[in-house]
Length: 186
Image 1 (cartoon, rainbow, N blue to C red):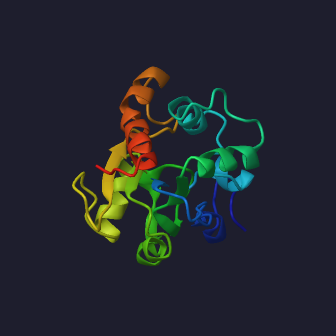
Image 2: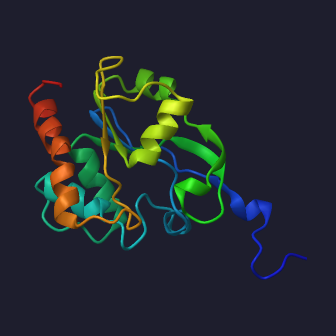
């Protein structure tokens, strides 16, 4: 019988969510793997201190984030923003990306084939970018496959940075969103 501090193998095996995407999606934001709070809630960026939704609403003229998760997803999709994670599954005790073991990546070739309008890919944090680079392909700022890749500071509370500093660093998402609405890229 495991001790009170032990985590069983089944507790350490994590499975991500499916993509939140539609045919109008042009910008894809990738996390690494949802944290414990998000997995428990069954929601992307479900930790109450994660500022992802505040950033997205501030950048895309949304005001304050909607209270209901479904409304938040509708907001993102209505602006051409898709959400997913680099990893389909992994072993991890806790929520830290540094604890990820045995990562299995998502089917990005299939996603990009099914949703060819995605022209910008953002990594919500350097861990997501590194996992993609290591297990999928190059993830630099240069266009690849007609897509532009950018790494943003993590919206997680584990990334110590003020909201204002993160908002400024995420400003390229707003610029690309405006460009994507007018048919441009890059």
